[in-house]
Length: 221
Ligand code: ADP
Ligand code: MG
Image (spheres, rainbow, N blue to C red):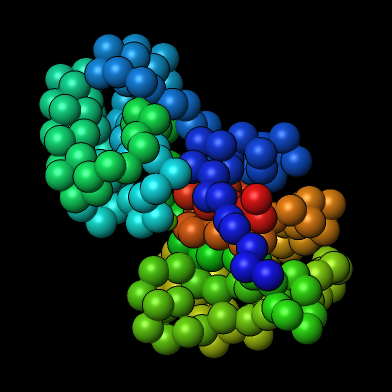
């Protein structure tokens, strides 16, 4: 049997996660330029705009993510430009609008993912974000359910762990906050077996907390 899958948009995924108590950057869907400007004003600048579509997997390809928009004029201009470049790149894609979110302060980018193994079922992955995960594959895995202790081991066993401990005068990130996040994700996927795949990429890790700035959930449908 071939299973069919549905991808939730970033806003749908974050809503689902937020209900489970998983920290995500506040994110709202704008269906027009006017709405995007109004939401940005409420949130406070600078903001980020992202394409919101169940058919676009990598939003930053083809101009689907614009960071650090500093005022209403920039938001309005970006809104129009992004829609036209996305429509060109993905003809026929269902576009719900653009998501608006505050620009998160810089943190260490990490990734938490879940995929299903035919033998072991849901497996969580942890790693440092960006190039480190794509090129170096510096990641660790544990089978769900993941305890706090397992989560601590997952974090400490990646080669890039010293980066989390702080380097060149940077603050160390909170390992307990990451452990808590991993355990919450484990519980979330355990309680929602319809979730086939999950990606929090990136999570921004700080000295006192960890927050997902991007999320993608794939459901078995
Ligand atoms: P993609 O679908 O391409 O993975 P992301 O939502 O992950 O899109 O955005 C791409 C990059 O932009 C992220 O890896 C992160 O570095 C940055 N980014 C995304 N959202 C925010 C935000 N709210 N604040 C700051 N940086 C962000
Ligand atoms: Mg991402």
